[in-house]
Image (cartoon, rainbow, N blue to C red; front, side):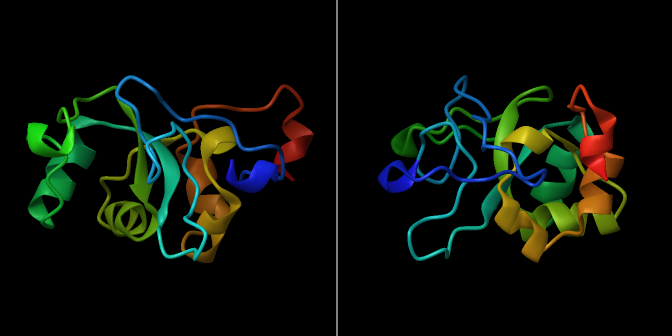
Length: 133
């Protein structure tokens, strides 16, 4: 996390890591969080599906092809990856959105995607469902 400051997820809890195999996040630290200037939108922790990967490739965001020169292994269905909120929103609109790990999705994603849309595809539900509002 930045400067030891706790960052929050879309449920208001502490942001949890998204994935380390492969290592994800704008900072490649496993967390979906913005950069200090808040320009990065890699905020949604997605569990990738074949449909989502195909959609991303079709809109010019190839997440499948390995790029060893950048340390990028290429992704497969089932991988957890920090995706950009605008691209996830577009996939949602087109009916191809990936599942979402709410506890690992940064609260800033709500600037791009309503919580209701994320809840539709949530794969982690807190023990007390009242936390969902």
